[in-house]
Image (cartoon, rainbow, N blue to C red; front, top):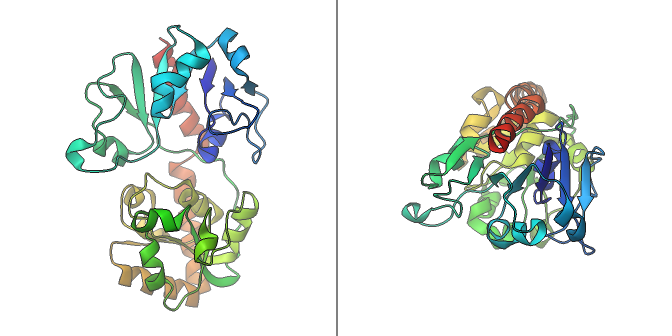
Length: 308
């Protein structure tokens, strides 16, 4: 099939374009949010093809994947014109606000399929009568990179100051009580972090730290957590959203108690052998549940259903 989609989330799109279709990616001269084109970080296959607005207007498109309300409301029509193209809406995020008001922009639509990336998301979004599916994440395996040579924890979070309690920024001092934490991600420099580091260097840097820490209260399911598991890191994570499904108890410590998480982090730092064993369990669990082949097969089924 020819699948038209915007390059919105780099890690997710990196997995999706590994499939057996041709992926048409809008590109604009500034490579901004509405026209990033091919990844400048990952080595994508030749089947991921950039298209300008002029090329998109004449392109054969079998299915369009939308990921943002503005794509649903106007961008798809601006790029593809007034034609009836089978549509899938891919929702990456959790709803915000009062639970009774968590209504999706694509609710009560009979002309599309809505795909959630976690069962937790599907539980919390109100999509009305729209046909919905869940496709759990798939990850392009970065390989086992764990050494744990640095007796430190690693955190990956973007914009920790602006997002505050959502990302658990307020919890970092407690978790950092006796174990130094290295923060990676956009905007972490504001609180003494390392800043945004692109893969594969990021995976190498994570693997040098003894444990991965996931303090985020309210997020869909961070790909950085799944990548850390693939790298082979033991996990210390808040038991929120989809984390309790993704991280088995043997892979580290998952709890709503910050005290328990702090104790586990100190234990992993003090016991490299336990940390390594927990990390190997985390890697096995991630390879099993978030395998790329399963992910792409699930997407094939949804695309075929939509096109039919």
